[in-house]
Amino acid sequence: MAAAAPPPAPTPAATALPDPTPIGYPLFTRIRLATASDVPHIHKLIHQLANFEHLAHHCSATEASLSSTLFTSPHFQSFTVFILELSHTPFPPQLHTQYSLFSPITQTITLDLPIDDPETETFKSNDKDCGFDVVVGGFVLFFPNYSTFLGKPGFYVEDLFVRECYRRKGFGKMLLSAVAAQAVKMGYGRVEWAVLDWNVNAIKFYEEMGAKVLQEWRICRLTDEALQAYANPAI
Amino acid sequence: MAAAAPPPAPTPAATALPDPTPIGYPLFTRIRLATASDVPHIHKLIHQLANFEHLAHHCSATEASLSSTLFTSPHFQSFTVFILELSHTPFPPQLHTQYSLFSPITQTITLDLPIDDPETETFKSNDKDCGFDVVVGGFVLFFPNYSTFLGKPGFYVEDLFVRECYRRKGFGKMLLSAVAAQAVKMGYGRVEWAVLDWNVNAIKFYEEMGAKVLQEWRICRLTDEALQAYANPAI
Image 1 (cartoon, helix red, strand yellow):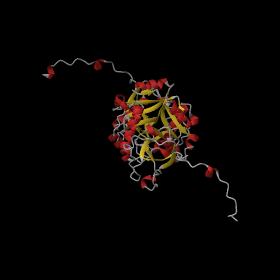
Image 2 (image 1 turned 180 degrees about the horizontal axis):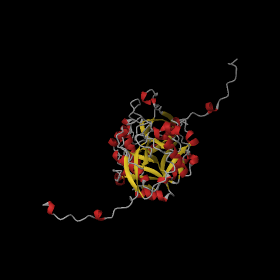
Image 3 (image 1 turned 180 degrees about the vertical axis):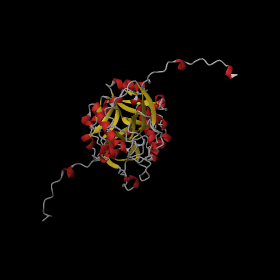
Image 4 (image 1 turned 90 degrees about the vertical axis):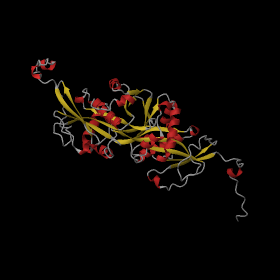
């Protein structure tokens, strides 16, 4: 008797007018471990960060200095970098053996408007498994620190940076969350970083992420000639 | 014609009256790398530090947690501890193979009055090459950090502690100087640590050592439940 049955009531979807354009623009994101082949991109990102902080005159990092000091120890046991990659097409399945220590975190976000990236050529990803559509959008550099009171390690985040055209989309939070997740996975006790006391937007952002700002502590730094003066410890 | 020459004029030292008693009491000091066998002492020192800072309720370090997280990587590449040892007799020659990475720093100081150490039994050194006279007086725990702007590592000093009866004798400076000297030796760019902003004596001491106090930076910390919330990074 199905043929005699009245037609089903139209659903709202069926009655709505079809959209002339898709709702938003998908952007595929991936956070993966950086390797030595990412140094040229990391170097450029560090200098963009220094410019952003108006501290370019203090930035003496070169590709050579980064290459000789990063990626010389196993990931997570020393200085470690997560790279944020962005693509307009989905990332390929994660079969690569390099991912045994850390499975890349992929996420798809939907943008209201497409992002116009003026530096796609400069920041084309080095990952040979991906198409030429993949660009590097930011990074986070972190390393183990230690709490004697907890009797266990944590992570200290030295730098977190997202390129200008990709800001205010949640990528900073994705990068920091990836570090926090790794800390939890490793049974670590803390994730720490530093913020400028006048950067109220950053402080608000970090507090919303659950961080506490330690108001009483100040960082002491021994560097340049003052450090070199200790070349002979017995003096 | 030397025999006919007039006798040389007496030097001030030759004319001074001999001292009836030695001027002061010598104390022999040594800074050496700690090993796993030092964990019981390090554990006690950490708890003394927590008591000193009125933070004992935040100190959950145990010998087991320290043993499972310290001394698992080569010295200087990860969490590293220097131990301060004190003795009334000179330290033996440094022939031990364990010293190949870091030659212990020995120094002799002269005290006006002998130090009465009420914990000599508790802090008797574990070093089998030394006599029973050697006690542990303090420690410094540090690990590599990284400056992206310099493009090179540094050291971060997490804890510096000298037992109460040995304070105000320059031992804190000796321990911090040893870390700074090691940083210089390794070509590192900075030594950093944190200080409480109300601890004016400590700030004065650090500034006299050449350190700058970074007034604008605040430390952010994600810990406990707020950290555990990031167990799944995709959420």
